[in-house]
Image 1 (cartoon, rainbow, N blue to C red):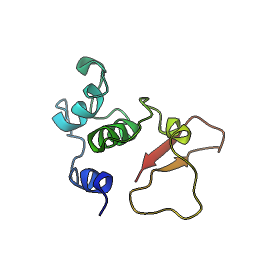
Image 2 (image 1 turned 90 degrees about the vertical axis):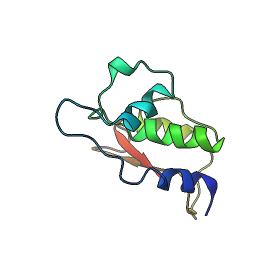
Image 3 (image 1 turned 60 degrees about the vertical axis):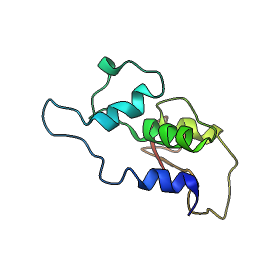
Image 4 (image 1 turned 135 degrees about the horizontal axis):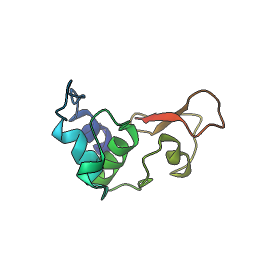
Length: 103
């Protein structure tokens, strides 16, 4: 298994905490990118923060942005995705800034 996917899978089970508390690892995804801890909750959309954290841990290029579709500018498109490749999905409209990113 490639290193990037191993790191991503090491986070299996990390999820938002109900109520006013926040999962410390989700907050770490944001702070490892240089964002202030006080500005984020674990309910904040964190897919891009997670992808950036994984890429940073694995030594890969990152988008350094919190929008999922910022990942469209990283790497090269492929018609034959492999395990560990970054996948960017759109929401509402293919031209919208809204989306989701994962591996």
